[in-house]
Length: 263
Image (cartoon, rainbow, N blue to C red):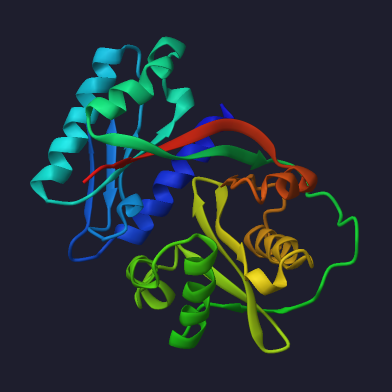
């Protein structure tokens, strides 16, 4: 089923970012994946469901395991849920159960997949220079756009995308688009089991509506698919990008909800 490829790549992206960090936790237990950076930004101290959930009691056990884990480390945390892991009756009670464990809903995102060719552009696109993040300057530009576009304090975003990203995390490939020398858009990719995941697609506020987001998305897909043109591409869409991804040929195959701990 397509949702498996979408959610598995998301978990892999978190594992890739967390791997090797001094405060990180990576573990699989009781139908839960823990992929935590040990960061101030709680969205990246994450717990995921990793197998089907048939009953509310089973879901409560998994939430209790995750909450105990993060409390033992005195960390704020987030529960990332792919809804297709849960039976319909369990899904209906998710928010109430999360609230009883000190979690509140903070995000909802469709999970999307493109298995075939990407549709041609409807209009001419700008032609920026694409630079892979491989230096402190390109990393700073990647961070600067991301922290603004995703409304995250710069110090939190910098902690997630630290200096190890360009040199020690080849599985998390980040790009910046430059136009007339200015950084205008970002994107990243993560491969896993024959699938490529797209992440951190963002356009600097002053350059929106001019096609830079579409241009860097197409560049990333072409680069990631080099030598494997039929490779499925997956992503989790924001509300801003949803219509673009539909136009490119992505189909919604699941939905993710994110609950953050309340401290």
